[in-house]
Length: 95
Image 1 (tube, one colour):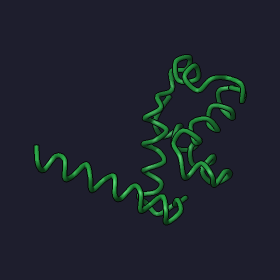
Image 2 (cartoon, helix red, strand yellow):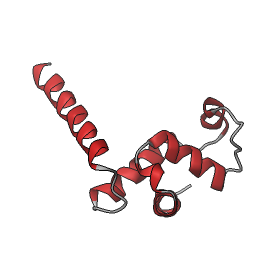
Image 3 (spheres, one colour):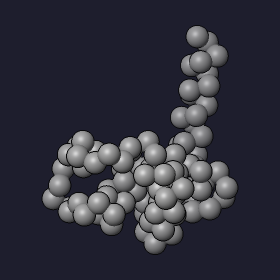
Image 4 (cartoon, one colour):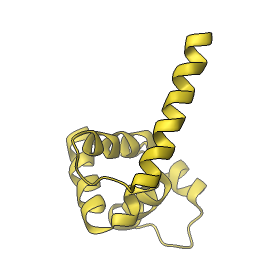
């Protein structure tokens, strides 16, 4: 599946289900329910293993939208992500 197709679908999910803006796992699960026919009872690990769609592609599409200022997460989640990013930067500076 092309990245533009994934982005279109992820955009719809982010717009329609605001809670998916907070968690890639929640976003992937909702995406899988809508577009892959997965049910709530399907284990998450099985969803990832059974479908060719890459979890990272979904996450990357969310980050693309949010970098453009669309479908933003809450301030609390933004702050947590910023701290994690700063931690990664510090870790690599010291390496």
